[in-house]
Figure (cartoon, rainbow, N blue to C red):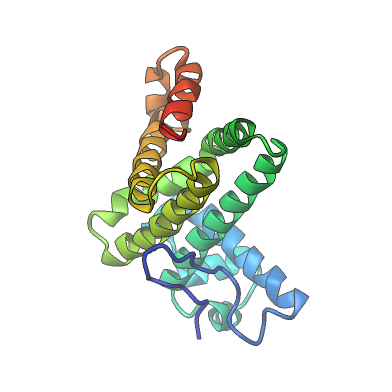
Length: 217
């Protein structure tokens, strides 16, 4: 049984190992090593070069051992996206705590956490590869769909706290808008060739826009 992944919109997928292994530290360690190896292969060789045998070799496991946790490379990709999302949301929440009870400060801390994540060349390369593949690979498109549903729900939760006067429908729309905004922005702030085209003062303008879009107006 592969790691549990919900395809329902707004539900966070899970990167936890299958039932029966999660209680063991060794199971957690192996899942992490598998996903770390998969990230390296995907970033270095692209999805076309991603194979269970290659990931197992890099993780120092037998193919059969790896397939106990992830029967197919599709399961690996889903779990990789799930882990990324869970880590990102946890990091944003931890940073928000530094803002105390001030909604404006908490909002700014959330923004800074999102911006810092875009500085990772590895994360940029991962998503650049998956975005390109989603146009022709149904599995990748479905996995990204689950990922972005969870991403949007995380922003909805953020807006529910920061902008409680917004209606649920407006929170959904603003969450979708902010998600699209940040994903597009990553092309100019990430590790790709478009970074050189970034406009000076972009971050300063972004902070002003964030206050408007994520605010309570």
